[in-house]
Image (cartoon, rainbow, N blue to C red; front, top):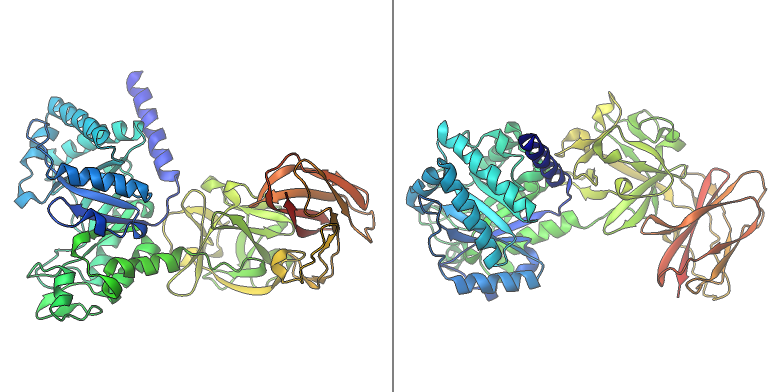
Length: 548
């Protein structure tokens, strides 16, 4: 029974790890022997791995080099919202006897895991990065799994991370059962040979190798070098000697310049979940900084360029249009021409995310558990998406489960469980109008504390021109007060639905009315900007409401 409970618990931990959404990772290694804590560009990193802590053959730990530096790094990084992990192992001149011995003995494994727990607690670290280079095939590979299983349980029980470093290609001794145990793997896609040791082609091959092995894209972090071979000079040294910071070859030394680093960062965005750097102290400064080049891509790719406030159509790789199916069935991408069901309002859902609405209903990812739908009355977590602009000009939509909406090439209902962006997860979009009644529709502002009226000729979710008018007052309204709503010209033929939203989330229970004038209570809400959405006659109209 205990074994079954442990297995269920481990699966639950892995499920949480797999479904937790993370921003694009930028992981930088900081060696104990090089680099200054004060020189780190923390704003451009998400994780720092302090290298290295070495194990003994019986599960003990050798003394950490430069502990004061580690303490300073942790406090400074945490002040800048950057996580710090301890990296255990490393190349160590090819000597991995410590790992080989301790992983093969259950008692030594227990000792090592307990020592790692104590070390992480002592230095207030965020997790452990295992850099065993490399377990052999056979018994050693299985011992690696045993070690990582114990570490995974103990780290995740404590809310800590477990990561690993793996070779770019040819990592058969890292069994696929390890993938569920780690939060992510850093691909050391460099040192392939002596000169052109880290080309873009090799990076692409490394990504394809691990994805082909079954490593989820959400756990794949692509490694890049900040040094050249065969001289092992840092990028900073090469630039100081006259190397072109945008090239990859200088004086018979092969390295990665700004252009290649940016290309690799785009590759990591398209097929992985982050980029890793060996190592931070080797970077150049100012305009030649490779970390700054990475950050330029990260900002460009992460910043939503979604056409918020616009009505759009989405066209899949099969050149067909996405349909909301009027909320009656699962969504498909098989329409030759766009009609009303194939037009979506792009709304700001807060936190850098967007919501898609068609015919007054929101698109839902169903958290990847079933085909996506367009039948939600409000936008909760499953109805919020990250709008991603791909390097080829298409866009992708990342869901709450960190997977992507897929058109399934029009041959099946659309899904949201794909872990990487391919052609079926890429869409072209066209703007067909403005969201009706929305503050995004560029209406002239009305500055009147007693009355705010949005009157504009624009487009609704169905793409039809109309001139909606509804009045709300007082606006601004005090928290806990009443908001009077009037809809001049209301026919009385349909139910009026009114709801107050904040960042796409319903904050006041939806009311159903049958009169052109009614009252909404503000329910002691915090001061701020909200949106009142009024739906009737199959259309939804929105106005901004300020609560003081």
